[in-house]
Image (cartoon, rainbow, N blue to C red; front, side):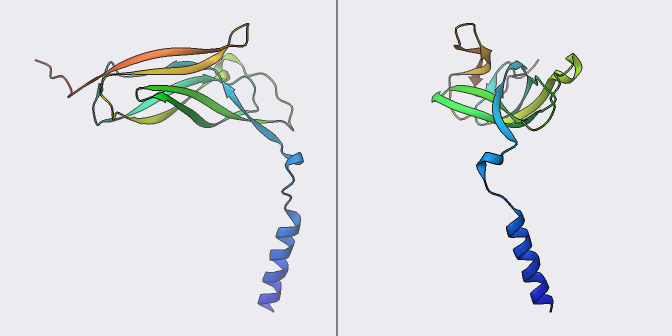
Length: 145
């Protein structure tokens, strides 16, 4: 009897789930980075937690993930991806609600200077704009006297 009940519940669960993409109630969207906090320099081999502030345009925008692109060894393009619900009434956020902060961990594995390009929107021509931050790499943490 328990096996039959379990089988029935499993069938009910499978039948009630829809995998139809036409019924998706959200999509992904990049949102502008407004600020990021980087150290003055990096130490080779160290890992850093980098806080990033981004603008959430509506109450239906929720942080999903960071998108990273690596054009070369020491350049990183970073975008903030939000999930945006499409089946709700989505009022614009107030100034207090708009800016949110999330962070990512970054491990320094190359010498030289890292260049971070943080996506912060498009200009009037539709070209991507970036906040650009450069952080030099040192062999070890400087000592203070």
